[in-house]
Image (cartoon, rainbow over the protein chains, first blue to last red):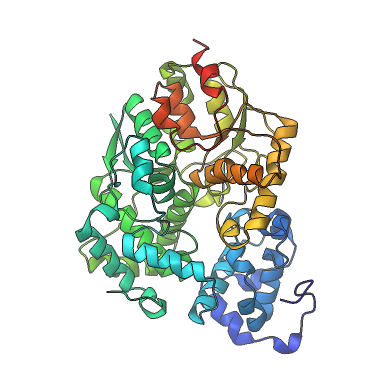
Length: 178
Length: 298
């Protein structure tokens, strides 16, 4: 993104097939957006100063600006807070537009490296957040070293991994799923 | 005796197990039987399976939900993301029969299924609805003795309310945590940015400076409008920001004050007589007289 953000919309870049792709990826009410701006007024991304926040993302998605949306990393800073879903007068579920853009981006490996780190931890340990030194922290709180989750039961973890392998993770993971 | 499946998630058992201790303690004290959810995994976090596809999201959440369903219990979590992610997955599973069918096809490969009967509760709504203000009042051993608290409910505990088993009357003016704290003898006033985001989560991972600046805005307003003894947090991710994140702001000399922070589960456990060393084992901001004030009141 250039200094000052995406301020000029180039309609020659509009790609109808990208709108359809986003609709199929969960943004099924995308076309109903009237650009009223209520979502932008409550969006933490806007408050935090990410220039490409929800209202503009939905606008660009509606125009099918594939390159603009896949090159910009703002969607990965979305807090998933769902304020926009709560207040949208057209009930287009704006957050689902963000998720649809993420889903399209992942397919072309246009996502931050930490996305893969979370997925790798999720697959290997059953936990996307898996910080070192937890055994010591658990001891301080008077708890057993490991919690009774997938981490503690290899047989159940293997089953969990099997269900994950039956999703699109199998196709997109840049790490071995064995 | 009421029973509940304790859903741990990731941040609570690995980063802040003092919250896990506290939830276990208050459930025992309030006569709720804890059902362990052996084999439960991550909710999964918004930036993982939910960002790959709706089926991916629903399938990974349904793994957890099916464990609770098999044991015939609802689930309780102290993490806002775990609450939001799994309730939304439940919502989609109910709304889209074709997703439910595909989810069960995949779960069936490992001998599991999910019919869609489980509700996911957070600590706030569980205490407010399942325990109730009156029972909580009766069970308190240490009155909070006028402790002034700044309240942070957390985004994922509030929205999207249509996906949740229970909700505030007005999600943009939340009062349940304030009522719970007042029932325990504390003071919990409203403030102008009570529903603002703390900046933890994807923003912290992908734009850390903007995340901390957003948090500072909120914290400065809490300091100016309330100057509380303690911030009380309804979500484990928000707690990481209010505690360890605040320590970062202090280190970077961005703020010149300290406000201790505890999860609602920790404060409730302490008021019910928990071992303070365990209930606050991982707090990085010193509790500065908070415990003395609570314990000195009786």
